[in-house]
Length: 76
Image (tube, rainbow, N blue to C red; front, side, top):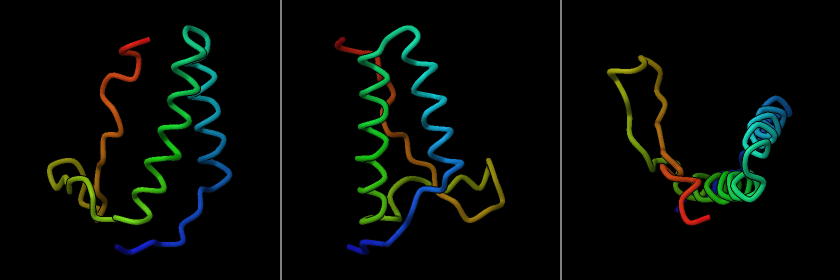
């Protein structure tokens, strides 16, 4: 376990708000779920930063991709 001390930038907070507002136009419950799931996943990635996959086919940068949930609107 790593428990990195990461922070979310103000631009990222703004992006999260824009995405949640867009989802909320159709489904307020799903928007709330998205925000909660985002923060829960962020905390997990702080503890385990090597979760996810490297995508050399997608980018040359040393980044990892992690899908938080494929079907956010299921079971509403």
